[in-house]
Image 1: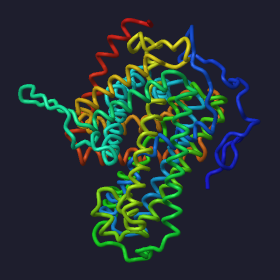
Image 2 (image 1 turned 120 degrees about the vertical axis):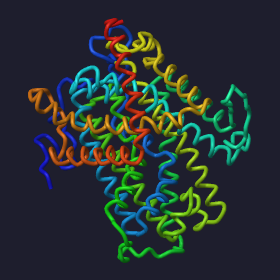
Image 3 (image 1 turned 90 degrees about the vertical axis):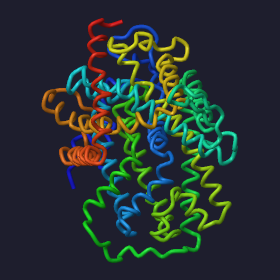
Image 4 (image 1 turned 30 degrees about the vertical axis):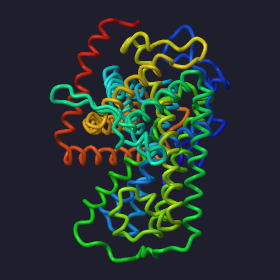
Length: 488
């Protein structure tokens, strides 16, 4: 096992004695970017908030769906559970890697700063450009429509199959479903909550996360105590055929279900004692998600045979139905609804912080550079992000755009992981309140996993991957335009 760095305890978290003396005190106002004047963000988030934000950003619909994809790829109980475990270990490796960068640059915007500091302002801008255009806004839209789909199971008016409007526009028809409307309303509501203050936004997000974690723990506990319809044989013979490609397919699905674990870094500018609280929030949050995912998958394996797991589109509801009947399946649908709502909330809270420092650096719309004088939130960024996400939700264009940009998102993750190595070489003297535990092996494992996802996405979706790079490349002339104007 790699040895911890000096000043780091065995869990990889900085000890109190190693904390930077410059750490802000609780509720200290801090500017969103370097040298900003006027109203500033407030450092009001602690490690507990960070852990809940991390959990809330990851737990959406994936755990209630993705295991079916894994079972199709690797029809073996031990391999199914093993893939989830390895994916979790790689996710924790990513959290430990990003924690070093977040502690070095505890500012609003996270990944924007990491890429800017390691490779130059163009790379930070291209990430922020892609995040606003599709990656984060499209992710919010995708979650919102998923929320509407599950809400429609309880309120048919909001079903995605309930068409509210169909307007022919030449060869294209603009249609609006109840699910799209519900998703748009959720975005508007949660954007408004986050607009009026960090305390309100984090409070709602934390409360919803506690509820959904409680729901998942209740499902796992009841599922493990209930008589098992299936006795999984973890020592069964391995399935025939090439095993490595199948494991790769399953791993890609699992890693995407863990996606969102890094969102806390975008809110680093609002964390108290970020040198300690950010690494703790990332590590404790990701470790909690890995534990929850393993428990839920164990329930699935006890509830359904592998053939049934592979054949269902909503494995969470199917497994609950097998264990507890129709009422159990309905309760899982309600849990998914709450889980998705909370994921939208945490994504809105964190991702709106990306565009504030971009604008303060003179590389985005000047109006987004201001912090709200009363609420101390990036109000204009929240409104702009919400408006664009609503547009993507109502027009239905998010789905195609999102498939285009998936490849670019993974490339940015790979570059961010490599930034730890780049900055250790180019800035060896820089203060590192937290040093990645297990360096260089832990960051290297994360980078290799990201590279595997890059290769897989390029092979499986070459057209979409190249189109995604094209969308990112459109940011180059935008960067030249804004950088030529100077700071607002």
